Figure 1 (cartoon, rainbow, N blue to C red):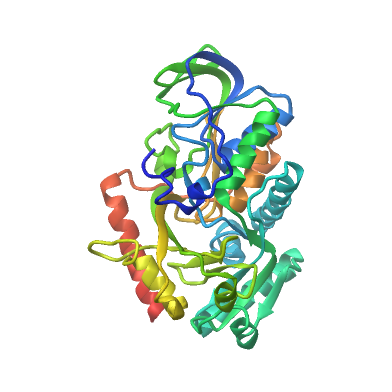
Figure 2: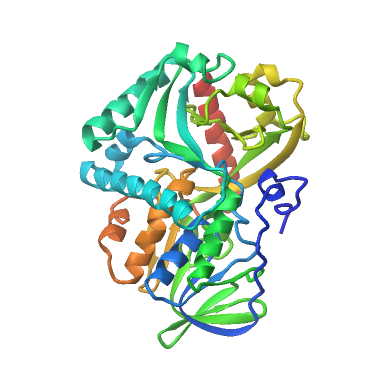
Length: 427
């Protein structure tokens, strides 16, 4: 399982709520729907289907929450990665309005699941979009006005420089847009809670059971693993970037992009409040963005792209350098954890939700917004499997571009794009 569950590397794994252990699939199993991937999307879809009376089996190659669902920044956001102005330019006003509706539904479902199933996941309130320069500040103000005028959103509040200085230490950012409906959570503990909720409704979860192939047998899909197989009427591909090696046609629509996160030593309550006198998480507006929050035990959790070259260590790496740009007063602070994970990114930076043939469904390409958007999309997938296609078909109106089928070029393409945009960010 790589180094994911080694507590020396991943803060979330080190602070997990007694993760359950699920068996490896052995022999033959039958169900209505088989879901590949035990993360936000897969477990959410399984839960929704079980509540509707379906028999569901979830196959996980590693462990529950192994992918981005157990490694991410855990940030809860409104809207979509490109912003709603750009989203509307790409898909048109009607589709953009429906996508905004789904984003709002996502927050409702996410918070509802945490409440309904008593999921202990260090839920924090609020998100700040921090602007490092005037042009970014102007963009944020336009986004706020757009969302208020077009969608009637009342959750945004402008934070000027003086107020921001009282919320964040340092002077890297000029101002911020506060989203009072945003927030953050411990993503692995949320995923584990979602797994428990699904099991309570009858879902069967098998860990260490990677899907190797899918064959058609009459009207059934036969999903083979190393030690067994599942026969199901319908199949859901919910592995996102971690399903890239298992390709039924969805792989050429995204590129797996690595993002890294570190966690400092405990800062103590006084010092933690000096650098973050807010419960909100933060994401800045650079293309190559930084994102951070304070953990429940007063550690700074800081994420972003590590574009440094040469050897790296816990105390010497690109993410720590970015952290010190934001909080130079933390030069003396030890880094206790550093880990990486994969994000499925596509050209549009909008979710890719679709169907392969009649009975294979997939959702991927959240482009950093998976914590929130996976909630509504998991319900929309379940509705589509029940035959309710209206919401599902909205995603078919997003004009996604295919990725060139040359995997050896993907990493150079991504890093060239990131480096170019980092240069533009600095200029």
